[in-house]
Length: 85
Image 1 (spheres, rainbow, N blue to C red):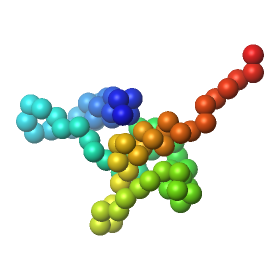
Image 2: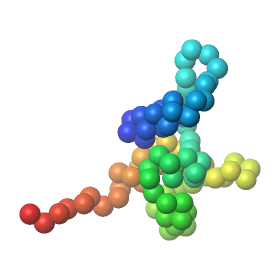
Image 3: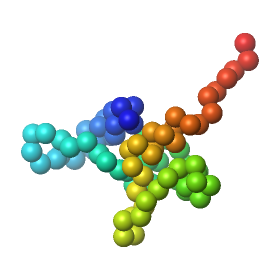
């Protein structure tokens, strides 16, 4: 999910957050709030996609997580915009 990972890296760099160690591990999953920031989609629309089973989410305790692969699949399956000529 290169596009989403690149945007996530840009967001983290600008936030002043630092990770321990020289190598930074790639993310395996995002919270709903992180997806909102990374995709520019609204929180309600993301939860609507989860309810309609268009976006697969998982629970870990109280947290709702979306794996990187499921987020990319969801974005890839959105209809393409076709403008009239």
